[in-house]
Structure formats: C-alpha cells, structure tokens
Image (cartoon, rainbow, N blue to C red):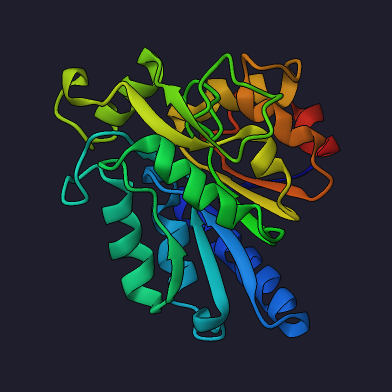
Length: 250
C-alpha cells in the first residue's frame, strides 16, 4: 500500500483527484469503458470537486457503482447518498451509466439487482474513505471479511451514527437510520485499484488503528493493507498519530 501525507484537506482532494484521473485515463486508453465505485461523505467533497472538473475524462464511457446508502430515507433527504452523488457527481459529469442504491425500496431486491450488475465485470478503480470507527463503506466493526455477497444489509453502530451527526448530515442521532446497504469488504477488494481519501483530525485514531494495528474485523479498513494496488491519501491531521516509521515505510 502506498501512503501519501499532504498538508491540508484541500491538497488531499486535489492530489487524489489527479491520481484518479490518471488511472481512469489509463483504463480508457486501453478499454472502451471504465468501471468505478464512488464513495460519499464529507471526506470526499474536495476530491469529487476536483475530479468532476477535469475536462480530459470522457464520462460517457464510465460506469459508476454506489458504495453504500441508508435504508429508509428518501433521495430528497440532505443525508441521502443518492442525493449527494446526483448533485456532486452525476449532474456535474453527465455520466449516463450509474447504479444508485435506493434505500426506500426492498433492500433485498436492490442488493440482488445491483449486485448482479456489479459482479458482471471487474471494477477498475474504487474510491473509498475510512470512518471514525475504521469502517470501510458501511462495514462497521466487527466487519464481515468472509462473505462473497457483493452487497449486504448492515446494522450501523453508534460511533458511525454519531459521525453522521458531527458531520452535519443529521440534527441528532435519533434521526440517523440504524440500517444501511453496504458493498461488502471482499467486493471492494476485488477492485483493480483502490484510492482512499481520509482527511481530518477525527479520523486520526482510526487511521492509526488501520495502518499500525493488526489486520482484523475490528478495524475494517485495515484490510486495505492486503491489496496489491491501494493508495491512501491523508492530511497532517489524519496522519498525526502515525509513527514516522509508518510514514517512511509506506
């Protein structure tokens, strides 16, 4: 795994977007289409702003899969990840082929239909973050490292739900759904490349646990260390608890 530490959240977003664009252009130079997985949340805002502004990418040749979504909230809700991706990605790029997870429908039907599409061909690049509890997508600890299912229905833990409140998506934890649809850990790891964007001081403990602790389900994103083509982008705040040896050796 390659580790990059930059001076600010903005610099993280810019550098990760430049990397993502290079990867997409490389794939599109060899293939008619590129398949990506898109993450959401506060950590991805600058990244998506820079990526969608890149004029070199032919988004008509890109197919996007949705990483996770709450169960039970409408697409008009401020915290809806469908709303997030529609406004910050789909409308800005004009991408035509995308698969959004509709948390208002029967979750079992949604994960079967979109999971089938996801498994139909390899994913070229996955964009992900790491939660305050170390989650990868909505795979909270202890995460399921074994299932081969592409999507799961998961229970959100309290740390994860409070994170959504602190980031301003909900007014109180009582408003945060307790269940969600999440891409599975194994499915994320099947991506040919993974680019992880993790700025902010609130992520420092999770970053340390995932990069310096044991690889285990209690630190779900620690599994990224097993991927042969994964890159993580941190700012000085999220990297503040890492040892110098970790930063040098990555």
